[in-house]
Structures are given as structure tokens and as C-alpha cells.
Length: 120
Image (cartoon, rainbow, N blue to C red; front, side):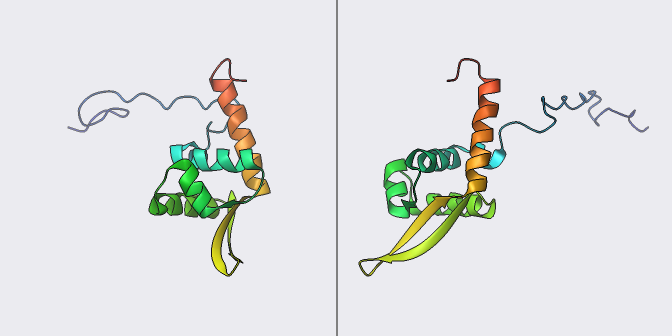
């Protein structure tokens, strides 16, 4: 015998999906909301200037691999740009927040303020 519509095979009725939050979109951009990516973007916003890969790694206490993976995701999402330059004949990887990245980060902070009362 087939289960009734809206029921799982266990016989437990599924709850309908929650109503979307105000504004119709899902709050807290998942690309930003990951802990490491939030730390990276927060640091770039605070600096308001490009940051060297090595300085980000040291400041945030991350491994090369962890930082590299998260920077790649942010770059693919259009939030940062990564360039390689030479400084005194030594290669240096620089990370910059893009205008789109700044806009999305500001939107993320605004959404966070709506969710958590009392944030300045």
C-alpha cells in the first residue's frame, strides 16, 4: 500500500517548508556565513586595502591549504580578486575585496542586524 501524500515512508508527516524571511530571499549569504570566509571578509573590510596571503594566514591563524580553499570559493563567487605580484623580486599573492564583495558583505551585516537584536 502506498503512503499518503505528504508522508514519508516512516509514516511521519513532513512539515511544510518554513515561509521565506522578509524580503523573499534567504538570509545570511551561505558563501559569507562560513566561519573562515566571514573572518577573511571581515579582515579585508577592516583593512580597506589589499592583503597579502601570508599576512591573512598569520593574522587569522589558518593553514595555507585552508586559506587557499576559502579564497578560491570567494573568488569564484566574485567577492574577492586574487593577483600575484613581485615585491623586491619575491612573489606575493594579494587579496582584494571587490565592489560586489563589499556590497554583499554590507547586505550580510544588515541581515544579521535584523536577526540578532542589539547589534550595533
